[in-house]
Amino acid sequence: MPDTGAPWNIPYVAGTDLVADWPTDSQTLAEAVASGLSDASRVKQFVSGSQATPVTITATSYTTTNLSASITPSSASNDIYVFVITNLFQKRDADSSVYTRITRDATQLVEYQSRLDGATSTNNQILTHPLNLLYIDSPATTSSVTYAVDGKLEYGFNNHQSKFHENGPGLILLMEVA
Image (tube, rainbow, N blue to C red; front, top):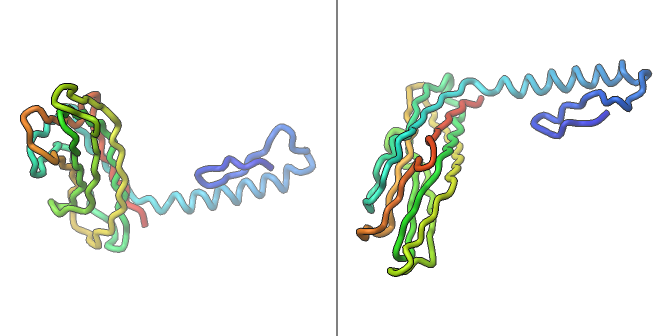
């Protein structure tokens, strides 16, 4: 019997399976579905936040991108999966980086670097690219926590600029997993 491969490797009955095999195949399928549902029940809740308005970053200190969401874990032993899906516009006349961080209640959890090389004062490099981040957090609380995304520039030159959510809305997804 073939296997779907993901996410729970649930087998399915193919047209080439023999009718005589169906009772066995059906039992295998039922067991796989039950196992998959058991795994899926580990997800306790989803929360999302979005920001459709582009946010320009020109500072060398962290500035909010206005992308955040709050979640109240149902158990202090559960993890929170933080997914960030947005895009980043960078304009530079010298090599430099944009830094992005994920915070929990204003405390930095992780920092990412997006580097733009090859720029000079005469060629103004411009780059727009997806920015997709994942962080798994263990907040160890049942109180509400807020996750947010901030950005900053490596250098604060006049014509260095970054915009978050430039070509579409930014999205933050929080998933509580037991």
